[in-house]
Image 1 (cartoon, rainbow, N blue to C red):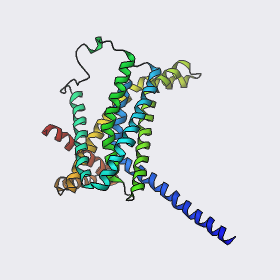
Image 2: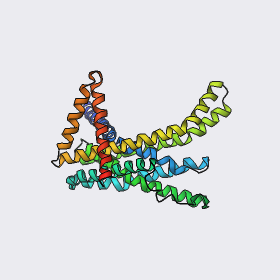
Image 3: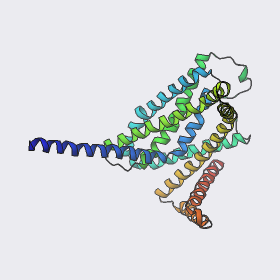
Image 4: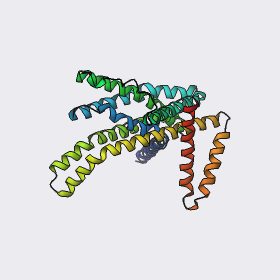
Length: 303
């Protein structure tokens, strides 16, 4: 009997360790995922355009297809590559992060230039495009593949940022945390995209079929507010790209021994924060993010 009790005690101890490991995996995944906020927000802001112009019944199937493509990008291609880098060439991670940061800065600055009317039309825009009649199935295939290719670039940046912020050292824990982060981010991004894309349909249904006046009023408000919301999401995504891209490059420079700019930004943010004693932390963060974003924009101008 004592042997059975000892065995049960050992099993309980193993279960506690396993539960702690699972908690640690998801805790590390969530914490590291937060660092990739800029690329994640931009991913959510970019994707809705790929279902624009399709019938309402095709929107969710297209998003589901892009979601599966995103999971494949992260788990099949980027996860093994990230683990190989982490374990055999960790020195390559900071330069790759800086390269990804430069890409985010370039994309953010391009969006600003386009909004101001000084950017190019882009390879998807050309005179007379609206007169070209394309097969819907072919267009859907083309749009989905384009979204998955764009996702690969953004996912590579997201996975690299997450990998650089994971605290776990065990190979399998690192792999599990990275995989968990990849799945959580993909569900969060494309779940949000699905809600955004279908919000106007839900609002229209509420406006036309609501049993109560407040329900119909909310539906009309949703329909009217979605264009403004999408514009705001684009602005937030652009700002986040510049902020995250700039901060990644500055942090990479510090790791490579060029910390002057990072120290200047830190000191300036502390000074600005002291001007507002009641909100010092928030003001310091806003000041730092703003200066990082301005640096990211300046990089584009210098290039």
